[in-house]
Image (cartoon, rainbow, N blue to C red; front, side, top):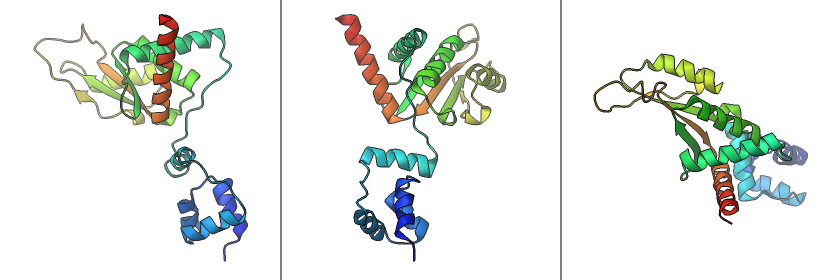
Length: 201
């Protein structure tokens, strides 16, 4: 017989879902709900439930925004938002910015890390390269630039184009930095709209 307290602790302290709690103790989900109702445990919102499921089941920790920004951080935030306005993906469920400029990629990653508080292990990088590039060397280069381990790089994509060398145009290939989080993408869209209003007023 599973003590009620352990079921409540599983839901409240461990942040497991009702289904995860039921599975943990080999009991029905209905029994979990009855116990939670018995002790008047507030149910999570759908948004909170999804967030907790990502954390407890998939290990996807949410981003943690930095507040009370310094002057330098305010500038970094503005630059990061403007970069995303110009170069970022606006639709879908993933924050993604692609470019061939190492400095631009470094600045955007600093914005994600320092202002948005993204979780390092959820960052992904995709490389697009041309026939006259060495993809292994490029991945090593971008790993150093981004400070993202090789294990978080996707399989490189060979970009076919016209004849000739493309090193002068894209010496380092093109990388796409991605962070799968619909909430962060929505926040970036709101920030873009906010800066647009401020500039156009």
